[in-house]
Image (tube, rainbow, N blue to C red; front, side, top):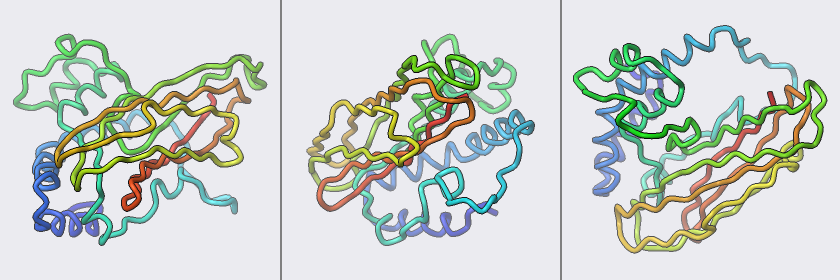
Length: 234
């Protein structure tokens, strides 16, 4: 049984929605579902040393609620989607320096090898969210030295032709981070068309353990495709 039965039910509705591009994405998602589960399982094993999330009578953040609740009617007409393939997940494991044996256990029936795929970056997994870890330059205090992290994403149009404009916002604890989206507009002329963009995050060094949040939206006047952003300083 799915760990998210409400999303499985929503996927069934989307499958019968009659939108070709959405149907293709859903068919592909079935082929990567098992490998996604194995990837998450392995990542969780590696993170067992981390403390469990605890409620401490503080306002909730994206660390608690992620991107928020799903809206079924709007999910039938999302406008744009962030598509992923099995190869994307395997590239992600390469970026995490998994061994060929570990990757082979998850890429059953595939001849996939990291060396044949070129450069790999954890930040380029085509997820609809952004996790931005900054290194603290001088221990616990930070010294004002700036660093920049760049992410790349690809959007697939599953709706009518249109032009989407980027809008960025940050919470008070994330306002020290400068966010630059390039390009700031994406125009789609047909269903199934793909467009890529980059997001650069520049921040001064902050005290170790600090965190902040933001949000990136692509808006065409009808659809709002939103992504949560989380900044951490280690």
